[in-house]
Length: 91
Image (cartoon, rainbow, N blue to C red; front, side, top):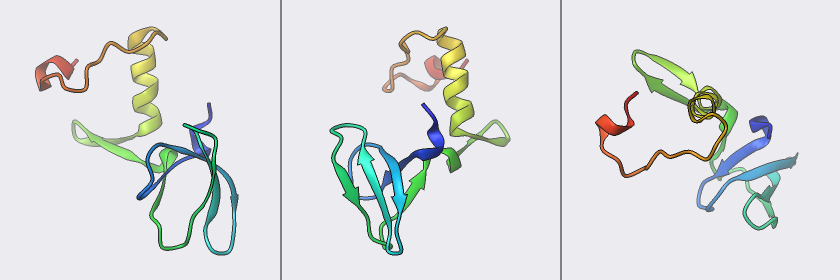
């Protein structure tokens, strides 16, 4: 899946796929239920490809983080537990 068209919209749960841009916002489709959403210009929209994470003295893109997780897990479902303590998450 190409993350360049995946986005997050403030005030709405889940992620969306960008369909088109309009003069007043965007048209997107929910990845959860497939419903179309039209946003206004005052809603905050974050493209996943533009999000960066600060890691050990430098910033890396979210795409790089996902690639590292994929290679670390060998392409299988991740065994990382979000509620784990910091030492368990550090590799």
